[in-house]
Image (cartoon, rainbow, N blue to C red; front, side):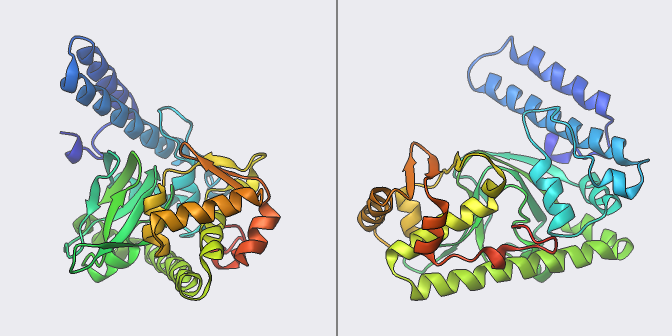
Length: 314
């Protein structure tokens, strides 16, 4: 039922009521069925959050609505998504609402495939929470991770335009994705040219990141490669605006090796070098940057390639 539910079909109160009913039913169940019902309740709460934001901003002046982020009515934080729609894609509130009104919610487990390479008629995908990866599969079955996706990222703006998935996208962690079907989005583009410009901007930003990856993967030594990747993820995670450089980091050493073209043993050795230099500490799924200036120097990192029009990291 939930994969067919959009924000156009239910009010905020109805969505909250459906979530409450799922939790009540779950209390009388156990095992796998209980987990499924609780998961549905969380998704319905998330839909209610989106619906509430749309209702709140519908009658606001644009300058007020742009700053009116959705309240945390559920377990999911909408701030990264709405900030990316506004800053990176440059979408006014009316266009944000238009996109969200036709979106469908997907709650994904760690390691789940979102889109497979070669699929056609792919939806536009927006990452609300969690971390995802884009990969290409080689003939021998090996995989190369070609990009990391963080909350707020449009996962495949270029693939949507080309109508074919050139890469596979899967999750590094539990994640929530908004899926906007191509058949419903295309008519919307005719009515909202700002969304077309937003897709162009998102694709250009992604190309800027990919260009930088080509440079540091191809020309830098192992320590600088890893340091550069850590700097980029920290910047994109918004750690510049936090009091502490301590944040969730779900990538394993094996996955870091897949990105950097290094063996797991080599990644471990480089991490030990960065740790002994008191630059970073990575353990138990968390990254702590001890010396940001020192890490930037080791990576020769310039965050300018991540900037969006307002000058902040995208």
